[in-house]
Image (cartoon, rainbow, N blue to C red):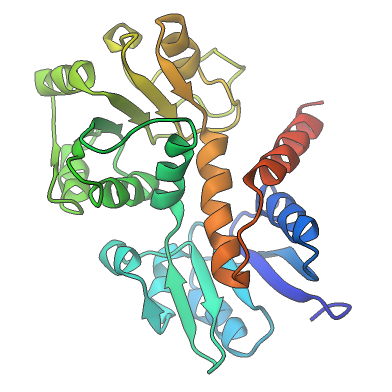
Amino acid sequence: MSNGQTRVAIVGDPVEHSLSPVMQNAAFASAGLDWEMVRVQVPSGSGAEIIGRVRSGEFAGLAITMPLKEEAAAAIDELDPASARLRSVNTAVGLPDGGVRGLSTDGNGFVNSLRVQGVDLVGSKVHVVGAGGAARSIVAALGAIDGCLITISNRTFSAAVEAAGLAESAHAVDGDETVDAVKGADIVVNTTSVGMGSESGVGALPLAIELIGAHQVVADIVYHPLTTGLLAGAAARGAHTVDGLGMLVHQAVLQCEAWTGFSPDPVAMRSAAEAELARRSG
């Protein structure tokens, strides 16, 4: 503990640019909680060790990023159903008996980021571009929504097939079937890193922008820049766009709830994140 504060940590390698401390410390302050989030760089191979520091009471919980998500899941006592299927966690919570509970908030954070934008996911057709860890979390969360049909495309088709196994309503597509899936989707989601770090609205695209129509919702989990090339192109074609900071904020809201039992203000968390991004860009 530090100065009587309850501490949580963002752990992984690297963590120096993570926005988690900015958002969570804003959440704690707005709630009047004497909590603090710190950054702890933890290399691959040390997942079990950092979970042990929760068991010892050094940290009340963790936000877990790469490359520790799978290692941490293997070392945790109690996994929520989604994390058990994913074999991966992004959140650890210390329990009163010294045990540790693990969960994955990424997928539900993404779903919530759409819901607050008025996007109805029930009965929707969703096309997911990519099949990495974020995509897998999103597919698992979408699979729990009534009538939501999911298609997945990825550069490596076998990875898309594996991701599709996380939801009964999902299947992998390739080639011409991908074109049809994108055109026929109500919601298109980019879960790849394509567009990250480029100037706003400039750079490579994860799919042909000509496939996007004005009736669609297009979401990108990349948040630097907030307006990626995909989102700029989709907006120009009349689509409703959702930036990646929404998912980051709403998965952090769920983490804060898991640690503290308090539901923080997502607006305060997003404002803190936007201010930090502006500071870094300036």
